[in-house]
Image (cartoon, rainbow, N blue to C red):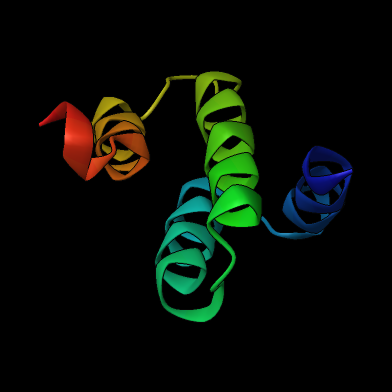
Length: 72
């Protein structure tokens, strides 16, 4: 469901990398539910990988946010 919404937004937007970055930053500050935020971040990683040239820095930022404090 989240992936479908993100894909719909990205198809309208010309600059996909900027939209993904905005989505990531917005999810950090606006989404309070950890489970839902995790789902959004997992979807963002998939979308970053689907770019013509994957944004590796963006992928790393999202993956770092998925780490829990207990694993550090």
